[in-house]
Amino acid sequence: MNVKLDGIDPIVKKLLPLTFRAHWPLWFQGNYKSGLAHVDLGPGTTNFYWLKRGKKDVIIAPFEVTRKLTLTTGIDNIHIPGSADNHDYLKDLDMYYRVTLTEQSLLIFNNSGCLHHFTNIIEEGVTPIALSNRCKHAYGSDPRGWMNLAANLKVWYNMASHFAGLASSGEETRKEEKI
Image 1 (cartoon, one colour):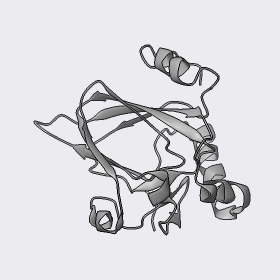
Image 2 (cartoon, one colour):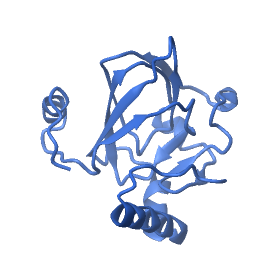
Image 3 (cartoon, helix red, strand yellow):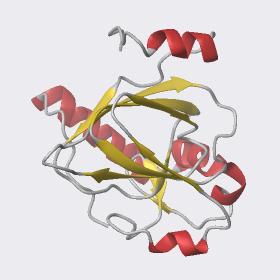
């Protein structure tokens, strides 16, 4: 939790001077194509997402679009089922932002309030490596996230099982959720 992130920590402190990390930094690497389009359950965080290596296609839907979507509860998110490796759901969004992140880019967004979808772009055998640094900032959090954290026993069970696995085996990866 307290690891120094040179180059990122000063930006966090400048933009959100009173914040703190809400989660340990997460590294995303591997030869996978895409995750699900989702909103993280939070609680109330802003993601300082640094792409160390490679490229990623990123889609972010603003608050007002995200709130209108019907989303399914996962382990630690609410998501669009079947959105891994496809973007068919985009035709149903009134508006969204799409950007290609390149090496050494820093994307700052509300991961607990906005639908987001990351797809790895693998060129010339370069697999992307990214760091997710989630900091406490509750503005704009999706209320469904708070409700799931507060009252959904499936979420509590899944998170407890995940943390118990980390504590007992030291395993730092999570198996893909079967939906």
